[in-house]
Length: 597
Ligand code: ADP
Ligand code: MG
Image (cartoon, rainbow, N blue to C red; front, side, top):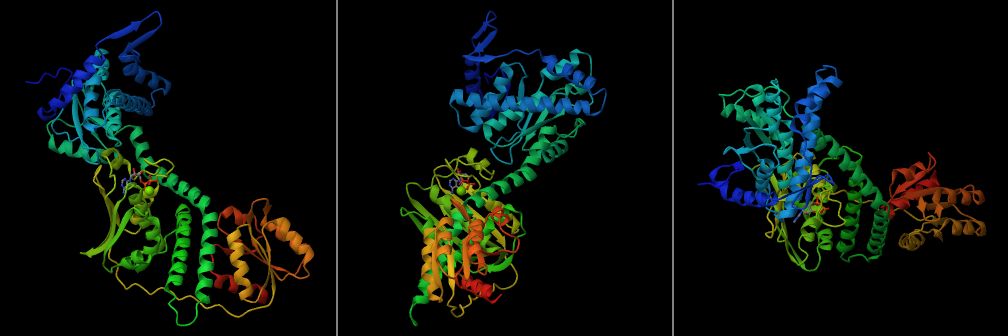
């Protein structure tokens, strides 16, 4: 026989709720009320008493009078009360979890209804139709036989066309959201203020509430569902936040992030590309050049990644191509090796050739995000496996680790942009990865358990058509014998250009600042070409170039930029611009074209 007094639940949940009740009973056992200080406390925590009708029927009446009978009045009142109560429930739940030291979601939830009873909101009778799991399937069906809100209406001798227990709905869904880390809302389906026997509620994640209420109506046909809006405004906000707003915030953050790293990153890539190219061309005939080519290829793909980040933030349409997923993965192998720290073993398993229609650099970004997460989840070492399989029209890219795994609360929020459990991380990895995969018409599934590792599976539809071969790179043309002034603050890029340009027959002057550039311009007799960075500490590329051209008006100018749209705005409209990272072949072509012009 159950000893529960403050709540009624299905038998299998009774032991859990008995513990909760014992705890909450002792919490509220002693009230410390001191009117001389205007303070009421339970368990050292301050509480306030509010007359129930004032925030129910009397509040509705107030809003109706302000809105002078406009139909929106009830909707406004409902939304406000629901929102406020949801926020209070969420905060109370978190506070209680801290107090009690509970982390297990069901345990945290179980104190909710008991707390509810002890604070006088309502008694809760939890139906066995409930299914409280910390995911999309969360469902709670429960009765309040005597909610303070319905009572307020009945005592005033009034009835309502719509359900009135909005604070109860808001508070209880806020509490459960705080316990489970899953966005939740509740809607009253039967209300005593409408003449029903009990107030009954259905609680679910916002995007599933209408489906859940529909299913409830089908399963319980004897009592019609109360009319009225599906859920208060809070619900709509949540939904909007879920799609448009989150999307916009995500894109903006990606844009900021990409803009922030693109400049330095592209400088590095320019050096990597240029040096690898020089290495390659310096190799004698008949020597194996695959390593040098691999560096060039990887650096070009890395440049594609930065462009992709930038493109995503600008909401550009993806440039879809049919490629072999296995090839994409094996091309990325050197990059993956560099991401994996020495104590992690990288196992590249079966790579079954399979055509998919994607933007290769974006797909690479997905893989890199997943690999980085896996590595970060294995601070003490472990195994990371990557594999590509294909069956029944679906290609599967699997990334699996033996790392720390995720607790249910983390799993529930892992796709949220900005959600991170790591100090200093952006929390955008999985959000972006899922977004990109979705744009390719695929899905991204995560299976993970605390302490048992994580498996991520990207599923993409098999594309029709064959994967085209990678394009060939063009050979550089002949030499020129002209004078180039290089203005670039990045030491390694300058050094690389100093080695490369003489090879192509140029006489090179190097300046690392605007001042140096001007010094050179004043002292040398002739300058044909100026190759200048746009943004430099302690000087501004275009201004330096202007100064140089006062001495050498016929010099032609090529600007190098590592992205940032605002950099381009600083340039004259007709300026020649070379985007970093660039290959030396491209640089040579552009310089030659400038001379011909
Ligand atoms: P970030 O890596 O910047 O934190 P993500 O969106 O990539 O952001 O991941 C969100 C959160 O999901 C991480 O902070 C981490 O808690 C969890 N997570 C993601 N991947 C894994 C993994 N492979 N193993 C364990 N936890 C992971
Ligand atoms: Mg990450």
